[in-house]
Each structure stands twice: as C-alpha cells, then as structure tokens.
Figure 1 (cartoon, rainbow, N blue to C red):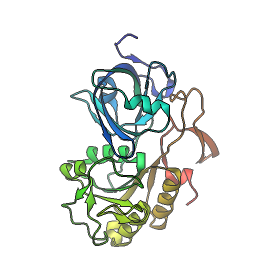
Figure 2 (cartoon, helix red, strand yellow):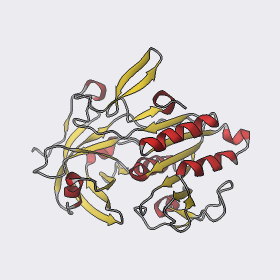
Figure 3 (tube, rainbow, N blue to C red):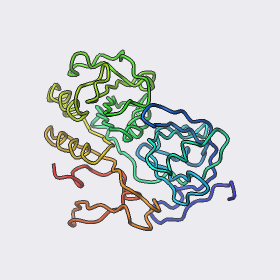
Figure 4 (cartoon, rainbow, N blue to C red):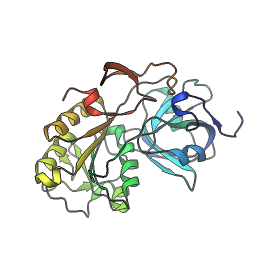
Length: 298
C-alpha cells in the first residue's frame, strides 16, 4: 500500500475521510483485556472531532477492519489514541501490535457531538468502551466556556488507576470520590460508578449517579445542562429517559456492528424518527451521534 494518504470519495464525507498507513507509537495493557493504542496518523488526527471513529486493519491475515472510537487526537503531533477491549480474534490481533508496526487507518468517520453554547454545563456519560468519546469531548471543552462533568461506569476494572478527585461536586453522594487521573490533570471533574464494589465508586449504574446529580441542581442551573452519552444500548436508553425526566437535550453515540463503515453497505442502519416519519439511518456516516429522542422513546 502506498503510504501517502488518499481521500475516500463518499458523497457525505468527500474530502474529510483519509486512508493512510499509520505507525503504532505504543500500546498499553490494562485489566479486563483493555488496551490503549497510540497511532501516528496525521491526516486522521488533523480532522478528528469528538464522536468520530477510525476503521483500522488489525492484521494482514484478517481482511475485515474494526471500527473504534477515537479517545484523543493531537493534530500538531499527528497521533490518535484508541481505547478498546479485546472481544474476538480481530481485536486480539490488534492487541499484539507493537511500536513500529504499520496498520491501515481509515478516518475520521462519522457525525460527532455538537455542544450548544446556551447549555454550558455539559454532562458527559460514558459506559465501558463508550468512555473514549467522552474523554475526547471533555478535553476539547477545556479552556472554553463549557463546564464538563464526566461520569463513567464499568463492571470490569477501569482502564486506568482511579484516584481520589480534587474537585468537590455538590450533589454527588458522600464517599463517591474515584476519578480518572487524565481528566483530573486536565482540570475536568469526573466520577466513577460500578456495581462491582470498586473503592470510591458509586454503587450502582452510572445513569443513577447522573440522575442523583441532576436532581440536586436548582432550576436555573438545570436549564444550562446538555447531556452527551456513549455506551451500550441499554445505558443509552436509560440516559435518554433520565434526560427526558429533567427536560434536557441529549445526544447519544450509538454502538453498532459495521462492515464498510463508510455508508456503502448499510449494514449498521437503525430506525430513527424524522420530521417526515420513521427512516433508516446509517450509524457509520449519518451517526454515530444522534439526538437521543429520535432513537429512543423517552
């Protein structure tokens, strides 16, 4: 394959998706068969926005690519970070990649999150492998008028060593102090939820923690909140119900199996409500981010 990036010509994304040979800069393993891989991919890094994903080759002997959410992107340094959990032989092959290896990167792909200035209190909810887009969105909000709070849930160990937060958060139950170090270093408050008994975590679903925090807000503060979420479908549906209960706008990033990931096969299509009635939309290019109320009955 020629190492020079080549644009993928798709009408909805012409000029925005690049195909390039990426170089693995490093990979770190975490409990629960979770990994964070850093890939030198300048074209993808330059265009990536929160909610986008990349379609990666995982091994020369495995023809199907894998769609994986982008957790961080540094346009100046030209790298992207991807957090993933090993499920199946494809991602097991990706976990064997080492620094210096080359893999094909197609991306960034998809419609990302769209924060609204009139709602500066951003509530970001990530579950399991839905955590990466929330980290990306929170990082992009640093230094802006937005004030993100990131809530993360997992039933397996988190892909980082949690530490007590330095941010006091009214409305968060006493003793719920576990936070993500990376976000702490960015100055972004975060809290963790799990039913697995991890120290400092909220004992329950992350959506229950979100509901408790929202219930503590005064009406004027609540009017400034917008909800963003990524994770398993049941979690997203529960998030939509919580947001609807408080009358809040809510954007969700859907997780679907994909083949081509550029809109050609329509294998990832989901039913979405539109002004003209129900329609089938492709998660890869029409999403993965959708208005929660067009996807779920809340």
